[in-house]
Image 1 (cartoon, one colour):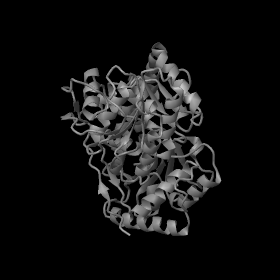
Image 2: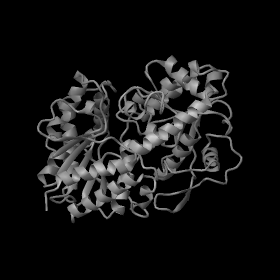
Image 3: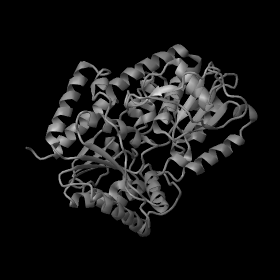
Image 4: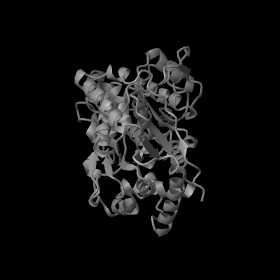
Length: 479
C-alpha cells in the first residue's frame, strides 16, 4: 500500500488582506468580519490552523478552501492546507462512502472489514507524515470521510481537531447508517463536528459538540469576479464552446492580482458547429458523478425543451484525469457520451458535452465563470446534493437557476423567487421549468437579481469565515 504522500497546497494571502472582500459587504457584515479576524489572530498566537482533505482541485471543498486560506493569511493568521495521499483502492472505498452517505449504491462494492482495514492503513501512513508537521495546540480541520481515519492520531499528538462533513442526505437509512458506522469510531475522537445541515447530523455522534456551517463562495475568486461580455465571449470562443471571431479578451486577473490568459482548450463532444454568442445556453457545471445526473439533464432537455427553440444545452465537467479522488469520473462521462450518441440527430445537435481543462485551477475557474455568466439558465439537477456550490455561484452572477429539490439546494433557492425547485426525477417538470424561463426573459432577469442579493446575504465567504472564527475561539483555551 502506497499512500502517495502528504502534499502541501500553497495559497498566497489575499492581495490586500480582507479589504477587497469588505467592499462587497454591508457595513454590519464588514465590521463583524474585522472583529472575528482580530479575535482569532490574537487567540491563536503562534498556533497553526491546518486543513486536511483529499484533493487540491475539483469539487466544492477545494473551491472553498482556497479563499478561506487566502483571506485568513491576509488577516495575519497562519492557515495551511494538506492533501492526504491514497492508493486507488483507498479512493474506491471513499467513493463508496461518498455514495452511501447520499443513500446511493455507488459501484455496489462492500464496506466490510477488509475495506475498513485498508482505509485505516492508509490513514496511518498519512498520520505518520502529518505527525512531523502538526504541533500540540494546533487546530486541525479534517474534511469529509477521506480524512476520518487520521482524526485519532491528530488528537493523540495534542491538536485540537474538528471533523467537517460536507455531505449527507435528508433521510437516514440503513445505507447511510452503515457509512457512518464505518468512520464513527474515528470521528468521535474529534473535539468538534461540523455539518452543513441539521438533517445530515447522525443520531449517534456521542458527546462531541456539533455546529452547523453552510458552505460559501468567494465573490472575488476567479470563478466569481466580474467579467465583461467581451471577456466571456472570447474565453468561451477560445476554449471551443462558442463560435466567436473576437478572441482578444481572454485575459483575467489571478487571485494575487497578476494578469493571466486562458491558454488551454476544452475537449468537446458535439454534432455540428458551435453556437454563436446570441444562442441561448442552458448550462450545468458539475463533476462527472452519477448523483449530478448529467445524463438526466440531457434527456430532460432533449425531450421537453421545445425543439423549435434555438436554445442549446452545455454539460460541462472537469477533464476526468484532473480530479485525483474521483475514480468514477471517466466511467460516468463515457456513459453520458454513449447516451448522447443514442439520441436523434436533431437532439444531439443541440447538446454539447464539455470537459474543461484542469491544468491550471484559476484558468479552469475563469472558464466556469464565463460559462455561468453567459448562460441564459443554469441548472443543477442533482439526485442528491450535500450543498451544491454551483447554485450559489450562478445566483451570485444574477443567473436564474433551476435546481433539484434535494439537500442543500433547497437551502439556497426560494422556489419562484430566487430560482425554481423541481423534483429531479421528474424529467418533464424539469424540462418545462427550463423552457418557462427561456421564453420569459423578464421573469428570468428578475429572478436572477433576487438570487444575487440572497447570495450576498447568506452564502459569501465572509459569513463562513466568521462562523469558523467563532468555532476556533470556542476550541482554544482561554488566555
